[in-house]
Image (cartoon, rainbow, N blue to C red; front, side):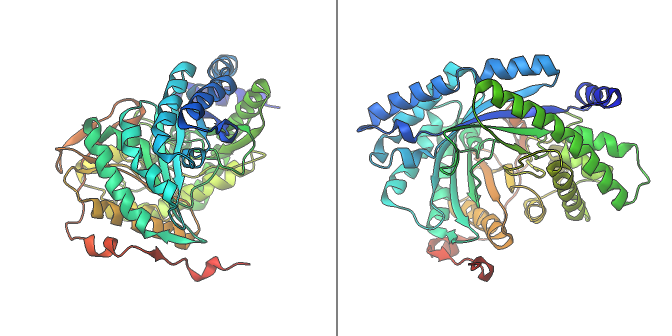
Length: 449
């Protein structure tokens, strides 16, 4: 039970510090929808998703009114579509269009799962499926796509890495300002219960239908730290842990009640601190509150490591089941502190890569010049995947080669996607390295049996 003080404290978090439930995501298995043709499968997919998720948006809105906690996004994730269309991969776009129509009918924000799992090798049906990704993203509004190119157990599929670089370039060409690339992410060690887009998909190890919730409160954490400007880092970590506990407790409450009302199992609470472009809702500003003059300066990686660890330690005690990505996101275009640091030149791709060694996911929502070669994009992905593989963590790349843009320009996506200053990449060619292909072997610690 909450006491009066905790209730008042939670109200303050909501009204003054940007506490919200970032997403309530329903995961839905599409395997029962497989039919004899792509057309019949697409029809079955539409009917199934609309039927299972028909009450998702009204239930979330009702919970938001009852508890007074904003629920920003209502989303759906589905079984990786490459598995659903394995018998007719050339018809995958028909399923993509059906999913986008379902998202419109439901009134949800995004639908994730136009995905392929190619971390060890790329089957023939997956090669065909991957070729459909740019068109699927160009012809839909709410559909998100992802590819898992590596794992700590299998190594990195460098042929898939090379292909992803080409797909990113093609997607940028087909969509305004490369916006389609904001809906496409490449992973190493992808998880099956991630509620956040663009990387969410419903894993084959999951139930038929499940509710996963992502909570967020960078502003709450920054506000709590502002009351202890002289605290040492041990005390600061304790403040973050206590704050993460309170944030997660609110998420657990909403998650379990949403699952009960929708008559589906509760899955996980994802603890990730997910920023927005709104001032007062920035992970970068938390790091600056800890004493980094500007994010990207020396000490940033250490501060982020402490923040990420404290969030997990505090949050895991507040929820019966933690999952997803659970940590701190550092997207450039979606965090006002990161945007301003990039505009000042205080942070670069190399520093962002170092920061991803200690936080959730990786190089996220970064705009680069439109003429960046596909091989360079693939090499950036290979670097991130290597960090994930060696450290046994999830890493990812969501990068936008903005057509016609150069370093110093800005790409405006609007809404939660924010704006992205175009950042420089290294000009040395990675073409020979990427063209070698093959499997980058898994580290020795992968042999755990």
